[in-house]
Image 1 (cartoon, rainbow, N blue to C red):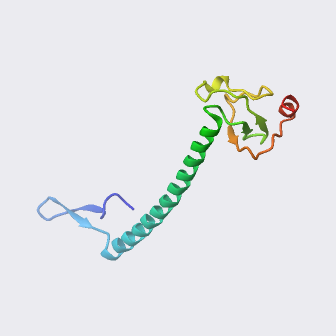
Image 2: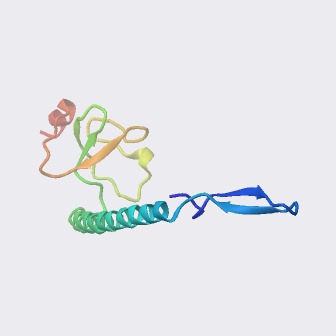
Image 3: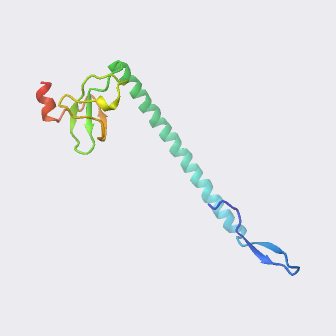
Length: 131
């Protein structure tokens, strides 16, 4: 929706001054208003759903932090290769530059996600080292 309600075009008056002319009719404004109200309703519904999702994730992370007592999660997955590695038990407070897996794969400069405990380690080096 445009920032201004009506587009104003200056028109010349007979006395030399400029007058403003409204070029948007009322029916068009009502259409915009209805469309905007629908968008707002949809956005509110999406926000309520995403709020519940975030609360669920927050709860899961809180439970995970209680389980691991300030350590990194046990498994990490490389996003690019989709390989699941066995993580070393490092403190969460340590800098990511020093984070490593059992096989030596470093987190720094790589895209990764922490995998759940039900996920199976797929890295051959990590399997061999932690067997």
